[in-house]
Length: 148
Image (spheres, rainbow, N blue to C red):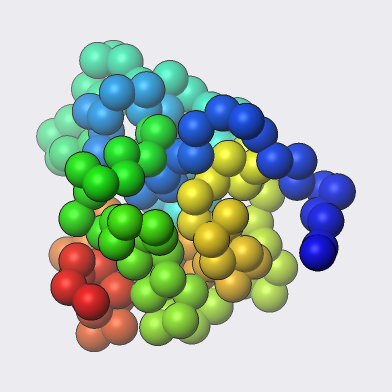
């Protein structure tokens, strides 16, 4: 049994790090920086509760074009959930190449479904996950597809 003392496990519900901006309990995980095809998430140091004012900051584009959101995992209500695990997390960890050598600082990690399921492998790839990606690589498109 391993024990990661840096990341205490919480009794609170697990959070999805790629949630809809309008999800109940949504917070801003980070801001998307860079150009199309080379976009990366820049994580916030602390959660920022989603409000109408926060969502309006993205205008004239949609909020998930410039921000990424986290919210309580909806499990069976999500097309990526297989009844036990998140297929999006599994495919991200296995299909995509790491974009970091070390895991990024992320306030979400202790409650992150992806990290609990896939460990640091998904953290090294997480910054490249963009919900509204207009120029995905073939591997990103496959990972994002809800099909097995």
